[in-house]
Every structure is written in C-alpha cells, then in structure tokens.
Image (cartoon, one colour):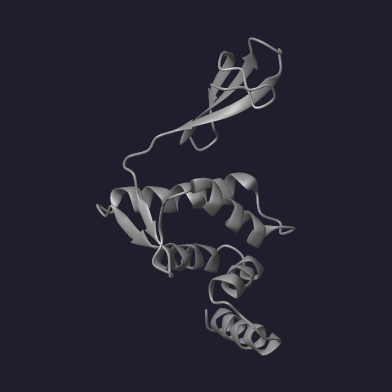
Length: 154
C-alpha cells in the first residue's frame, strides 16, 4: 500500500479489526520509509458496476462519491456515522447483487432518496434538492410540503 504522505510503496500493517457493521476491515498501517501512520479499509466487492450518467458518459461506481453525497445531505443532523455507513453499504450491496453490469445514475439517486426518506426528513430534502435539481425556493417549498403531508398521513 502506497504511503499517502511520502509515496513510498511499502507499508506495514500494525493493527486490523472489522468495522462495526462487519462489512469491511479497518487496517492501521505504518510507512516503512517515513514512519507515518494511516488507515485503510478493505471491503468485499462482488462485481464491477458501471454507472451511466444522464449525459451518456460511463464511469465506474465510486462508493466514496456516494458516501460523500449522503454525508453532505446528513451534515449537522443527529445521525450516527455508522448508520450512514450501513445505508451506503446497503445500496452498494444492492447494486452488486442486482446482476446488472451497468446502472443509471438516476437509479442510484432514487435508491438514496428511498433510503433517506425514512432516515431523516431534512437529509431527504437536502439530497432531493440536488438530485431533482431544484432551481427556485418554490421547488423546495413544494417538495417540503409534500414530505410534511406524507409524514402527517403516517
């Protein structure tokens, strides 16, 4: 594993342990050249999944990109990081076990929306504002009122 500080190609594993949800192994490493310590995560990947973007471009599925977008939606909300990790892992697992080699970006967005819907209404609205490309305040208002109405029906 390449050192993120000095670029040296060899590091030594100092500690390994499973993450809370058991979906990954957390490893503490030390660079054999500069001595810096850093953390890596090892995850199971069942298959390579490609993402078809709205403009026709194709790119490999990026778990970290998905994680960042969910974290941004959940920023400053009372949501445990482990819960976000489970949400992202669940979506990734669904994509890898679907049998499809390629999935539309819109489908991933819909999966996140569905997961956030029961998670936190503010995070749900934040994610929707980007996913559905809100352009005006009334877009937020209309969507938020539909979320509020749905919550009152349940």
